[in-house]
Image (tube, rainbow, N blue to C red; front, side, top):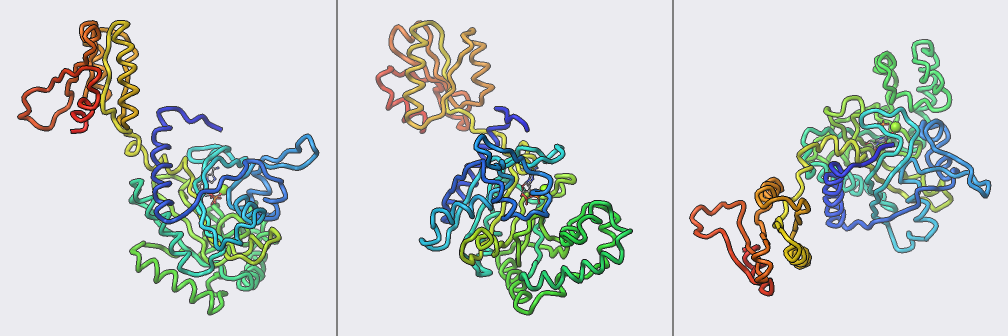
Length: 414
Ligand code: ATP
Ligand code: MG
């Protein structure tokens, strides 16, 4: 688990703000659920035989003897909250969330035990239109953050019936070749054969090229659904690749599954993963409720966004001051200008004017306000332009009385 240091938090804030803008424009509402849930929510919702539930959860008994788990993902909690509060009585829910998730994994670049996700859930919507809209929200957001080397991979997992037929066929095929599989996959053959398709083991991957394909088991209805999704994506100019082995790690997916990957993330290539989970809400005791969503990993996203996103806004004004009376005036003017929505950095070095000017320059502020003993005694401020695009401007220095703050602001935003 890692600390997020000030140098990084700027980038995070910017990305979170951009996400919020995208979500607001798409009419989504935020939901915040607790970090701790009853363990049963995840074992039922995600599935006992998944890696997440089987190996990765932080589970403990609380003082009341209940089994609790730090949430490993957001969807099950959102589904629980929707049911518990009867939100579906108000119609389909289009929601977003963000926050820390916990999985006991081997830490490496882009993989942590506490990590952070931003996610979107459309709950109560069955149409292919909703699949395309959900994918487009992720795609446009990631592009806006500045990532343009992304690949969208899609697949159809079909309906439950399609998948059950396929599972039996795949199981037989794999059992005939059990000695050629890696150890992890051997254990999965009978409990969760679909997950083997997702194996990262090279020789298993090689073998799987010849395995039966889920696509051949899709009913006509499922096929048409998948074709229409592709048509909608083409219509939106969102490029995609079909990846027949994309099955996703959690049990609750059906029909559309997708991932957005980048070549720049090494083996942790997936920045966004999502899909349709029509069976989850009923698995948790609710009515049959078709749903689709995705989650983006913030750590991987910030690695990809890199330096580009880190340049935070430079201050409008850097306030330079010397002496006790000047200090009071400097603090007052700083607060007044911030109240006018300007970004102000107040010097704390107490060093010579020339050193303070150097700091002002380094901050990339457009203006400096200078208050020395002399100015302070006359209740005046000297305002000096530090950066200028208009070459023919005569004077770059202005004197204002501290009571004429409105005039000063007019000049600043001029
Ligand atoms: P992976 O195959 O990389 O383990 P996953 O399928 O387990 O990913 P999801 O459950 O789909 O991941 O979560 C969605 C996104 O959350 C991932 O694409 C990734 O960006 C991020 N994520 C998942 N696990 C971690 C982790 N341990 N550390 C950092 N980010 C993670
Ligand atoms: Mg994982």
